[in-house]
Image 1: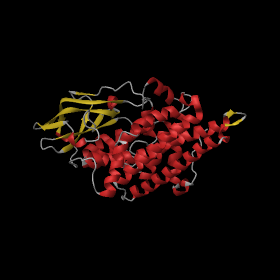
Image 2: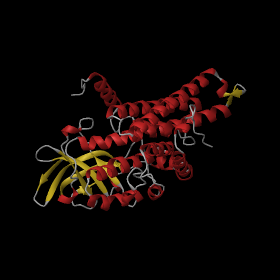
Image 3: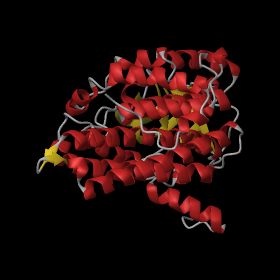
Image 4: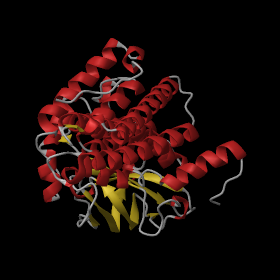
Length: 388
């Protein structure tokens, strides 16, 4: 039975509504994700049947206004939802993150009313699945040099190029794709499934995020109607604003993975006996557990404060980068230490630790690599960009 760690009584900083929202998602994860997710990860399959359920409990675009199918919740609620989803598996949280922060958010923030009404309610319910196309084979951390292009052809655009490492790509009904126009300005487009020349092959043979659908987005002279251009944004500011929202969700989500590993390790250490006493009675194991709960507590407080700043529209991109970087590294370290407490049992699918550890190797890289986030902090405190 899972017991969520809360060493500093962070729950007292949350509203009753926040706790109720978290409980509903926590109960769903326990009921629908935990019992099946290891099997899907072992088989390298995505549990598609969970999509509609995720829509029904409000995990897609929870901060999008109710008018467009969202729940109209605040940023703290979004973070708590991401924590519970990632406690189940990073693949489940990734699906919700992409749908919410990288697809619904740009359509809401940069789209027109017609686009919002056409796509957002179906994305919120899970009737449609979205993807986000920014990363390219040759340009990951350097999206400003992207090669994907659009050309004005009168009543439509012609799109050519490719994107890779795209969550949800193989099943996406609509993709928010970023491409350069003929003036070299980055623009956002809505590319829909079935458009001639648009394919989305799946990426297989992954050791990480095995329960997540990852693929490419390939565009070969795809005709994009003019009305599918996001009209209210130009330049890299658009995709970077989306990434800020996604990174914020990850900062919370990673805590869920860490909590799952810590709780598993603590319960195992109390039950497992060696030399006629519980493993938890040995000093080195207590050191591991004490350091884990300390780091989780620090991450909880960091995320809570960041959520408060987001609700007040005060959070900076650099603050979000710091939280994403810190909390994912924390979770990965805890997964590794937890695996050691379980010994050989830690590598089996009977426990979630090794699955979380492998997933977090992707989470520490995507939505801005660990090193890039460090340099964002460095630039923020010195005023000197080290990656130009």
